[in-house]
Length: 228
Image (cartoon, rainbow, N blue to C red; front, side, top):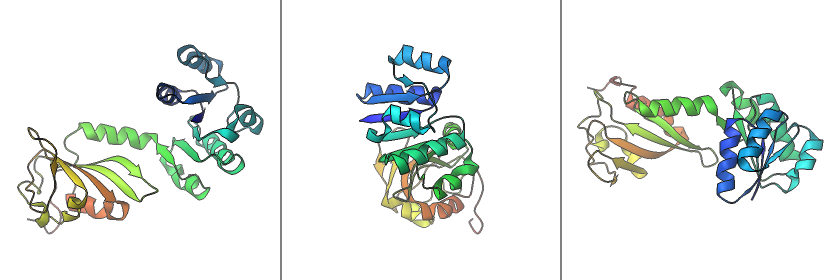
């Protein structure tokens, strides 16, 4: 597989390393000499001098034969321009952009770039995953399938403690959830599963049910309206 990455920063370095280790061909487009030198030194000559939103540079990079195109600069404007060229002019099958400002997500979507990775959101969710007061952490968005993979944690003080899932309003989680409990192996979830503090549910949830899930969880340590 041939992968073209625009931008030579930290994200590009680790992405390139993963692709190379998996046996794929990589080219990183970067105008700054310092970033290129590091990549070439550590990853054995994988860079091209240039701007990823310039047609001449993309022609030289052979983007027309790329299987994946990733825009990972610090500028959403440059990422968007590069992705549009890769998708509309070169017809690259998979085009992905790093999203530096979450407010720009809708702009990318309106202009046809459906696959974006929100850096701020990734940091936020990873931090939340390490702090046990948050009952919900997003692990992965499957946008094309309309699904979210989430981690639901039964926090200390949660109204869910000692409740069967079937009596909580969260019974839809039993359709595609796995329970991780300290001292036990992974367990299937059913309506009769009784929840304990620190239980973790790994769930695949339709995006149109996320608001219901958030409402039923009620937030960290809070009691949902109407519950007792």
